[in-house]
Image (tube, rainbow, N blue to C red; front, side, top):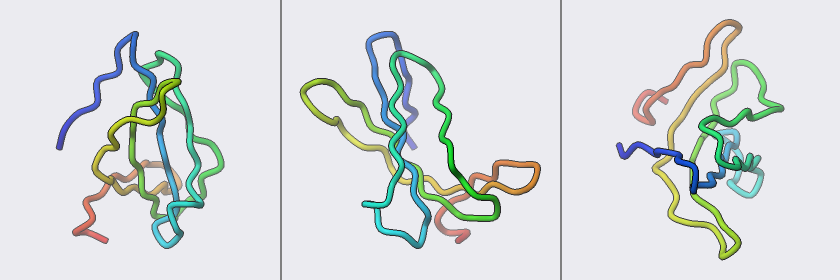
Length: 84
């Protein structure tokens, strides 16, 4: 897995959607030189797909590999697709 390092010249878009939904239902959260992003509107006990990509005025950049996670009552659970 390649790590995404966000530096001061990088803008990132965090794309999240329910595993069973089409990517067109994704929630995009843009960052402006931050090292973190808060994605709102997620439901507990639901598996989500997460991908990260760079963006600029010229358009979107390369997109990361998909990662999968689920929010439980107390934890954020990150999984490999092989566990789903």
